[in-house]
Length: 125
Image 1 (cartoon, rainbow, N blue to C red):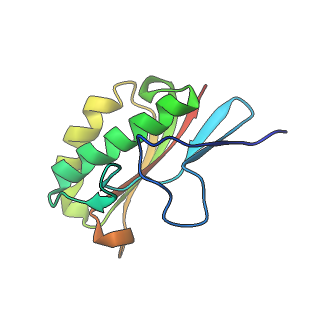
Image 2 (image 1 turned 30 degrees about the horizontal axis):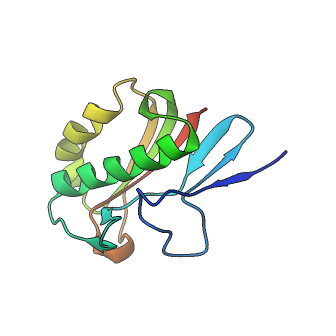
């Protein structure tokens, strides 16, 4: 089965040896997106709401470049630096994932670049 790498300048460049997303078997698998502004390459926001908005913009760009969308998402995995941000995170998340895909959401000890949130997606094409 062919695996196609996805790249867009509308989302942050990978900060390690991985692709923004891959397409395989009619599905797109995104790498985790954090709150990096793709224009500057920097984390410019500090609150969970601001960072979640940037994450969603980044995911939207990767999904679009893949030929998919938020509406075609079947599963998300969400990582929070602090589980007390769960409610505020959900407020932003719910505006984008209106189809209510399956989801896991966990608190983790640390995230890259000290961000508060990271989200990865599995979607259909």
